[in-house]
Image (tube, rainbow, N blue to C red; front, side):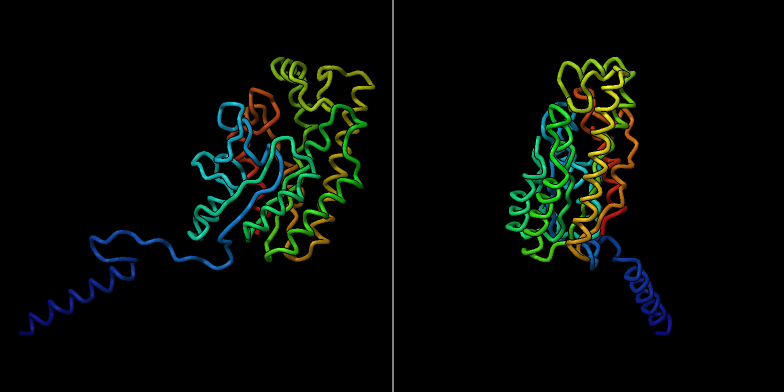
Length: 279
């Protein structure tokens, strides 16, 4: 009788030990409990960089590789990192990024994010405002700020979303990196990629250098306004402290089609830099 009770006690102890380890023998692993503080829905606003253009090996929009909402295995996006903490976000990530979008497109995208009731919204905009046909065609700093404010105000009037505003990638450094690369120079010249910056890419003439510096300075001015606009939004907006602008892309991290848009490896770099600055 004593031996029988001894065996029963041992069995109970074994069951308790397995329970403490997260299950019973032969059971399937259960989903991790939802952790507080992680959103259950999100949206991405921006341009072709956020839309993942050129990141799938072909020159098409590829949102599955987006640094923000990408769901593919190649890029460890914000969405995938949040999903690992909160399963409720599964399938609730909208990418409203549009190739060619400038700051004046943000308001319409913000309206879609509000309609989707996104709890977390990422914003990356400004490259196309600087990448005009000429330096004189760049969006003015005042207009840029006005368009950003308009979009953020729309978000603010919607659900209480958390917002991440990122800086603009350092396009001037990309030119400096590629100006001596024959393939990059050929592509930039033939395809007229970002002409305000990449026109005559191999030229070291004073006029060309001055033009490029004006583009570089305009991007810095945009970043200043993005930071200020986020601060004006309030405590539910977070600025990335320039982390995206500080990403040092190599030519192996941009598309070989245009030597401009981040490929999957580059999208991963954006995801790493921006997520560290996020909520």
